[in-house]
Amino acid sequence: MTVFERILRRLVTRGRLTIFYPDGGHFTVGNPDPDFPDLALRLRDRRAAFDILRDPRLGMAEAWIDGRVTIEGGGIMELISMVRASNPWEQGKSIENKSLFKRSFGSVRQKMWRASHKARSKANVAHHYDLSGALYSLFLDRDRQYSCAYYPDADNEAGISLEQAQEDKKAHIAAKLALEPGMRVLDIGCGWGGMALYLHRTCGVDVTGITLSEEQLKVARARAEEAGVSDHVRFELIDYRDMTGPFDRIVSVGMFEHVGTAHYRAFFHKCHDLLTPQGVMLVHTIGRMGGPGVTDAFTQKYIFPGGYIPALSEMVAGSEGSRLMVTDVEVLRMHYGLTIREWYKRTLARKADIVALYDERFYRLWTFYLAGAATVFEHGGMVNYQIQYARDRRTLPITRDYMIDSETALRGR
Image 1: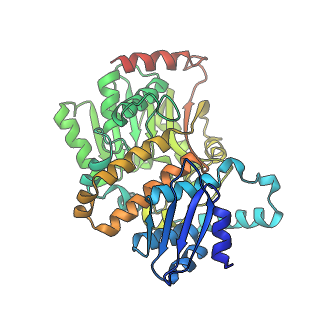
Image 2: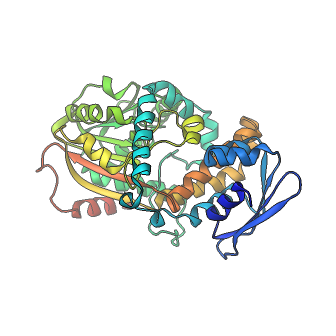
Image 3: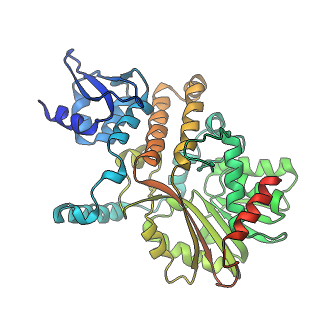
């Protein structure tokens, strides 16, 4: 039995997978499972197995992108789901149970990764967010919310649409901001403007949205013009570090992943200074469970160069000393998995359009990215954190009832 075979037998225990070598040889791993179809993975060249062994995620990704492996009986989502479901985060070893060598190696690896991380914020953002706007319109909801939606149950048994789930997400966030008409709000990492426009429309606040993506800026400004609210909802191409306040509220959705660990303290100190003495901030970010880590090679190379998913401990430590008080923490566990599966379905349905925009190789890259992202929330170590901060302990009510009441009212609109 080869090393490749032994590793695959450990990796796949739920569902049955047959691997075919280029010379026609094959072997089968796993067990039949009603939750997973039987799959076949065909290696089209001899190098594929070696590349997967060397770096499983990057090696498999590049073999898939290049067409050097193909899947029968399902797609890349089914394959990655099978592997991840066989190795759920909950069944991994705790840090205390890991050997001293592994813990020490992990710590060194993390420090080396941080040391090599370059602060190229605008270029890193452009790599992903300055892709054709037509691409995002093919798989996102109508409001182009490129972050997790908010679902009422883990399997979406209620059957709500992606559009409704994204509206509910905005209401959920707005309720935590405790907004009042006329307030000044800063939206750090405003995307295509959906959150800023929503907050003005539903809460009567003035919003300044900032981004480092020129493509997003164009769309956001055009949307504000079209809605006739440019005097109340403004968008700027500027780094948060160059902003001046004061603002009554700050909201940041899906931007903190691009701040970089070296800049966490600077981020929170700057946000403190941008807020009024009664100011409140809500940060919504992808987060990792189980402590600090490193960005995997595939994501770093192809998707979010310079990006890093924070552990909750890193966020809290980063805000310590800034005189911002953590006033509420919520962990969204299954929401992003449900969201990304909807994006994946829409991506499959619009394959011809995406291939026409880019090419077949890009389409395979995008499906690998979405499949990996969905399953890491379903079985892996990623969640979403929503952390609320305030400068003054008396600014907000001391129970969460106001959030529920406000969210109910916003959904009614």
